[in-house]
Image 1 (cartoon, one colour):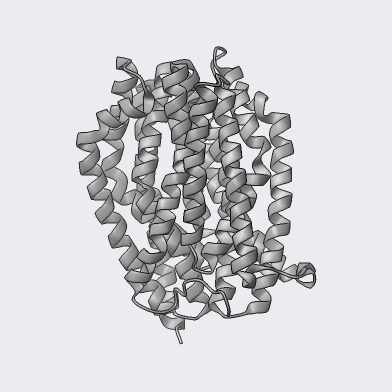
Image 2 (spheres, rainbow, N blue to C red):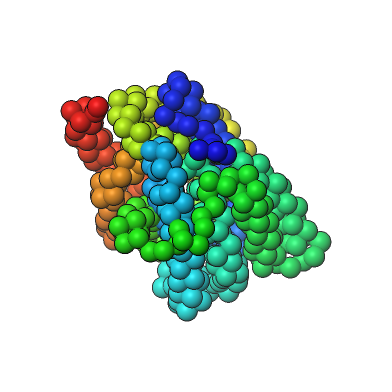
Length: 448
């Protein structure tokens, strides 16, 4: 193959995983800057109510965007398999299928959002004094969903062939631009909360153009021709199955978060602000774990296509060690730096907000090693083409959050909100580990 990326089927297992993972991690950091910059600038310029408005939309945003990102990543796993198998024809056909499916998904969710977003915010119990700000913030971002899907599909294609570095360069540029536009629109231009949405859309649009221009000029193996767009029922079934599986996994988790948001919204503006601040901090510190896990999806898929089964098992062990070591570091660091980060991101000195945010950090960080193992196992199983097993862990989380919202949070209040997810990580990780053990024995007996 010409113009190929990093071949994860060769070389030192740990080195290729880390070489592939670190650009994903840095990309995720700058991707998170989109949301965190909105939070910081909105909180500092517009106050606690505007901060709560952004926070109240977080679960809905994760639900819609998470599903579309899941679909593109899932289709990227199929593409990585054909790349590992060195099958140029099926690679181009799978790219063509991913473009068609991605466009339809973006269009569907854009229309669905226009129709149902405001009623959904009402159902979630968004406080009356912030619901209009929340709606105007999220509806603008949702209107640019085709841009978001286009970028994430392009990045997924590059990662499928082992090129996680190019997407990083593009995202760094657009994230820096987003920070500047956020400050300009919300601050000097006084565009309010809408300014943060517009800044995000402009930055994402530029990253999309740059990403696909690079693919067209430098990665011709990913450019399908007209004949590759002919519908292959088996291929589309595989692409949709893998994409929907990962998309549903993301969305089921996000549905649980949306349900949890209803309980959070009933606890007041300061608690909403504390929750969004603490989760922004958490999002940054779990990024090395999510990046390693994302690398494992591509690593497992490429090596599955190349029939390197023993290499896959070795890779899962190495990745698990990496995420546990990082989780311990994050726990120790946040024990000392949590308060300062809370003040920095929230832009608030309100005692209730700061105390609630710090309590969230103190109680969740001891569970980070379990969360890291959960990420690695879930992504590895997805990369191996097991569509249903990772979904089970997502359903565990969904039903667990429903139980917490109905029975536990009404009694424990915000403490119940904090304990909900960490306690659910334990059975989720256990289910995935049991599933992996069974499949590992299968691969040991099946390897060439």
